[in-house]
Image (cartoon, rainbow, N blue to C red; front, side):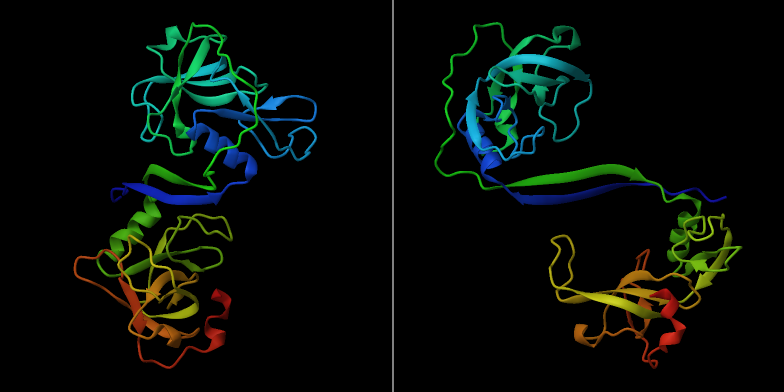
Length: 313
């Protein structure tokens, strides 16, 4: 049996969102070294603030300041900080109820070790030197044995409010395609496309998954398909990806390779984007050293009859 492949993969994208008046005030306050909560109709102060009372669902907008000091309500020690976490050395994740608040805020506590952390300990905010209006304006919490901080309860009104944030989402993981897809990938390196046939319904699935998604039975019989195929549906891409050197607009399509019972996707080239159509007959175009087709181009054959691919739409 051939060795099963594996490779490190990263999924990463920036998530941009606008802020309502409550979250805008909270993040703008952090930029000014002020922590704001929101007061509910029954007098509770929620930190971080929310726009609706979680008990009554009533809209709440009454912003008030709370202290930068507080009490740890629970904690967990982080032995191995990961990329993008608040601190690079081991630290504690803590829930801190700031003085004047009735709920707890999750953040990092800079402590020399787990023996130095306990529920009920007093802490205070360590502010970041450069603040932009984000939760990272709180660099972390640190142990504090001084007197309670004097602060004036006030509403938060600041100039140049923060109106939006960009959160960079990222997932690092090791992907293993398994037996079936390893065979599929190895075949592609030889410029062949191989699927697996279901022993029950007899459909050929490309790429194979090792089991029939319809019948739920294991598949093992390998079947070579293509190389030609038929466009079953497509979309025109008008937004350029920063890591993809392809000029827009271009066409991405579902392509039913000859002999396959499932359409796969690929880019269509060699034809103006506005001439791509359902039923167009295409073939793969390979580049030197590539492990998969760069794109698909028209074969010059007549378009496929609808009845030959309608089950693959």
